[in-house]
Length: 154
Image (cartoon, rainbow, N blue to C red; front, side, top):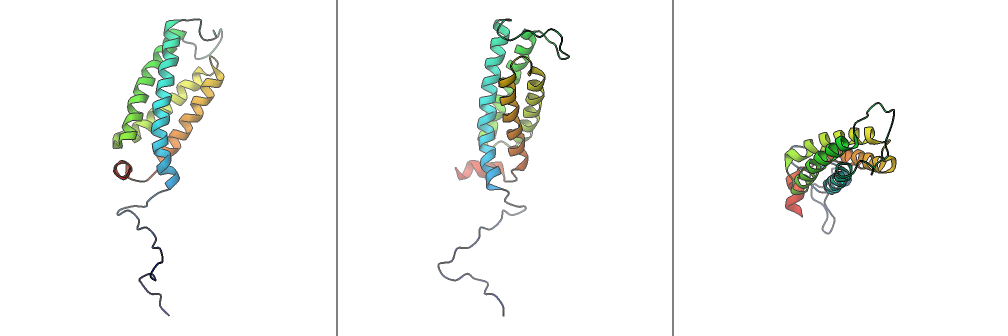
């Protein structure tokens, strides 16, 4: 017996996959939008960390013998510049720019490394930022949907 090719009246039909690829996980697609927001917020936090480090050398704990020892002002400039770039890439992801996904993965990775090296200065804040960056990297790598489709459907 063969199955009918058309569904019975009232039955729901599964969604057709996107032409040219798989539709990907809806969690990852929603995660991409959330990743854009997180990159934007992470950038703002980076700017605030940078301003605090540049404005006053006594805001953060001084580390005597640390392998990745820079002055707090140098760390401030690193976080400030990285934060501004993260804000721009986060906005690009939210607008559905295709370049922003790759840039988001690269910059979240750089931010993760910078915050790992920053760990002794502010451990809790650095760990929270590392966790955010790990989620952003996962969301941007796992989503296989077309970024312009997310923008058009909203």
